[in-house]
Image (cartoon, rainbow, N blue to C red; front, side, top):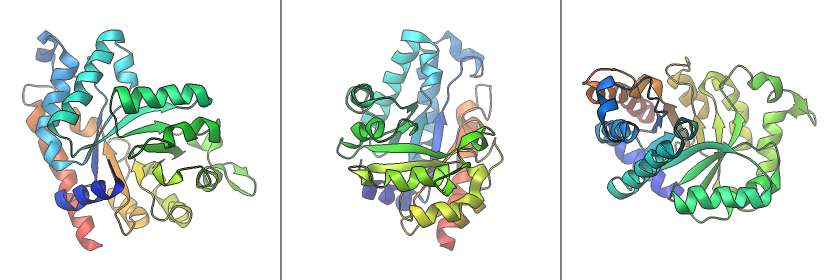
Length: 272
């Protein structure tokens, strides 16, 4: 998917909502456990109930790998369903991969070609040759971890390296990578005030922003400091939407929660 098409979808839906499909068999409604594939049954219901309110879905790959072959099969069904029935949706493999060149090339092939995701999250710690293999794929996007929303982010990401914080070094150096126009970045909503400095370095790049909702991040703060002229934001909510109910009305409850965020986003877009 091209960036321009993604921007068009944001404008059309008045939404930059990304819904995280972090599907946990211990949390989904119990009646779904009787399905042949409970994970896919849950995902399909959530997607059907919310696709008109969001522009992206982000399965966290760990929640599928944890269930072995059955989990991987559910992931394949989920991405195939999205690509066939909702091709306008931007898909993110939240895999946080990051390894040397040959291995990265295989990860890229797995997620971009075999599974057909539009993008993948990547840890940048191993540097250029661990990232560039992902950037060679046309109309695919690599989302680098820049400044994450977890408490441990302060262990390394904000330490001074080369005269500035490490996350700023990541942003600066990544701009020199071949095909860097295919880069996006993860910036946690709980670090909203940092967005001012981040936008000085990557003024137009898309930012994937987790942490709104369950982790306490503020949507209005994210928009105030992070929105670009082409919006440039994908704000993720996972638990707050997909686990809005653990009863048979779970899909309807997810619609209502997604609608709340979409309406806030619509208001923020109209402000700017």
